[in-house]
Image (cartoon, rainbow, N blue to C red):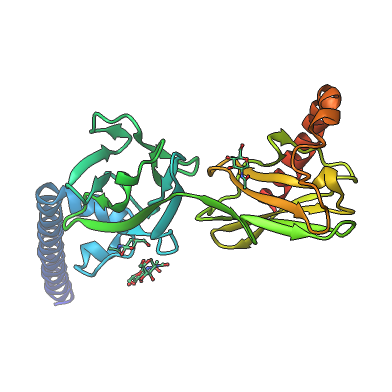
Amino acid sequence: MLEARECSLSSLGARRFLRIVLRVIILSSLLFLRATRAQDDTTSTDTAMPDKRSLTEEDSVGEYWGVEPYNLPAFDNSTAKNVSTQLGQTAFLHCIVDNLGDKTVSWIRRKDFHVLTVGTDTYISDDRFQTVRTSNGNDWVLQIKFTQLKDQGIYECQVSTDPKISFFVNLSVLVAEASIKGGPKIIVERGSSIELTCVISNSPEPPIFVFWYHDNRMINYDSKRGDISVQKAAAKTIISKLYIKDIGEAESGNYTCGPSNAGPTSVSVVISNGEKPAAMQHDGNSSPLNGVQTRTSLLWHFLLFLSLINYVTR
Ligand SMILES: *[C@@H]1O[C@H](CO)[C@@H](O)[C@H](O)[C@H]1NC(C)=O
Ligand SMILES: *[C@@H]1O[C@H](CO)[C@@H](O)[C@H](O)[C@H]1NC(C)=O
Ligand SMILES: *[C@@H]1O[C@H](CO)[C@@H](O)[C@H](O)[C@H]1NC(C)=O
Ligand SMILES: *[C@@H]1O[C@H](CO)[C@@H](O)[C@H](O)[C@H]1NC(C)=O
């Protein structure tokens, strides 16, 4: 009786144990199947869409989710849209592109839709045109050397995105002109002083030098003759002043302002109470000094040049 009970008890325990083992096997195999199926799914996605994975690995999450990404090529809006240069000078047209990536930058002349440059390669036979990159690399500067009046107009900086994006620059070529205020004849009293003002217009950049001449002789800048100043009066206007004090017959005559970037202009200075015409009288006694004068002139011109550089870089 006890034995039979033990036997039935043991067989009961064995069956229950077997049932549990079976359940565990079924459950684990189900889990295993699900796991392998899931793995298959991901591997098949991977092989089908390799680009997306690489995209998500970069930080352009936007494109992956179909949202406009923030790092597409874009122009720097602060770049100058109106550029003016002086006839014969080199013009610099800037095009600053952020996040260019693998796209290219081209410059197109809109007047005739001529492609001038692609990247840094020139596509026009006129070798005055060239695109250079600045050291930080995102400014694609179109250089036009020895500018001519026909270079005026609109230039397009185009980036090869899809769709293409463009930045337009309007180039003006200016011809500088000089004139002396109060000309062509200025009458002054003996013993007084005058200030001759040479106005150089259409000159966005100061001339490299402004030379003054008295009857075809370059004036030295000693205290007897007075000072010469060069200053910016407006965005495109430069003024050069020549101060002459204690005017006598030696100071009368033809004064010429000769800036580096414009043709010369002259005025005639006449002494009011002088009976005889003073124009040519001092020429004779000034010629022996010419060598010394030229040398001091050169020194003064050099100083003037230095102060101009100081002025320009300020
Ligand atoms: C540049 O200008 C455009 C149009 O005026 C504007 O939509 C854009 O936000 C500006 N970009 C920057 C970087 O200022
Ligand atoms: C450029 O010049 C045009 C006309 O000459 C003017 O309308 C425009 O405001 C200027 N743009 C800038 C940024 O100075
Ligand atoms: C370009 O600039 C010139 C000179 O300032 C101006 O006369 C012309 O209207 C400008 N062109 C355009 C398309 O803005
Ligand atoms: C002054 O001299 C220049 C150069 O010789 C000459 O071209 C100009 O006509 C002269 N001007 C006057 C007002 O005498």
